[in-house]
Length: 392
Image: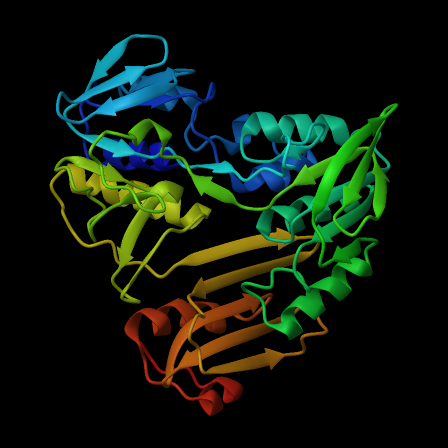
C-alpha cells in the first residue's frame, strides 16, 4: 500500500519515466488491504476494484513493477538490494515498506496446521474459497481482522465462534461499555463468544477441523481464521546498519539513520510529534499518508510527519472511526446510546481531547474530532456532553 500511494504521489509531482521501481515479493500490483477482510472477502469487490492504481498506470508513468522478487538483504553502503534469486538492484534512494507478518498460533512443538491467516490477497482468496459450503467457522482474535472476518462469514450464513484471549472484545482499545455493545450486536447476529482462552491445538477429522482450546473445550468447524496481530517485517534489514527497534526507527521526517533511506507503513517506528511519543501504526490510513509523505520528502519537500492516528472499520451494518491515542486519558465521555448503532466516545486528558470514536454520527462530530486532537483545543467533559465543539 505504501508503494502504491507513493507511486501516485510521485506521478502527480512530475516523476520522470525510469526514476521509480517497486520491488515486491507479492505477485500482484499494489492493492488496498481493508477489502481483504471486508468487500473482497465477502465477494463484493473484484481484484481489479481493490488495486490502488490500475496496472496500466505504472506503464504509463514509466514505473517498473518488479513483482515476485523477494529481497534477501539490503546493503546501504553500496546502495544495493540483493534478491533471493541471486540478482542485485541498485538504488539512489529507498523507501522501506516491508510491512508486517502475521502472528501465528503455535504449540511448543509446531505451528498449527489447517488454519488460515489474513494478510495478503492470496490469503483472502483462500478463505473466500474455503467459506463456500462451510457451515461452521472459528475466528481466533477479536481485533480489526477478527471482527471483520466474523461479520463477513456470519452474513454468509456460517455459524461463527470467536475465541477471545481477553475478558472482552478488543480490550486494549474499547471501554467495557463499548465491548459490551459490540458483543451484544454480534451475538444478536449469531456470533458466539468463548472468552479468556487461547488455542492449544487444531486437528483434522475427515473434512472438519477440531479446535482444542487452552480450557480443554473442543470446537468443531470447517474453517479456522486467526487474527491475533502482526510483527514488523525487518528480517531483510538485519546487519544492514539501519536502526531497528520494534520496526525501523525513523526520525520525524520518516528518514532512517542512513540518509536517503526512509521507512513507511506498518514497519515504521516513528516519532509522533503530536503526542510526543514513538509509535508504530498498523492501519490503512497510516500507510497511505506515510507513503505520500515519503514521496514528497524524496522530491525535496522535507517536513515532519504530523498526522492524527486514524482507524476505521465496517462490521455488519456498522461503520466506525477512531482517532488519536487514549492512553493516559483521565476522563471518558459518551454521547448517544451505546445499546444502539449510533454513539460516540471521547477521551480527555488535562482538558484536551486525545482520542475519539464515532459510529454513524453526524458529520460535525466526525470533523471536530481530528481537528481538536491536532490543535489540542481546551475542552471539558461538559462541552462534549453538550456537543459544544470549539471553532477551528
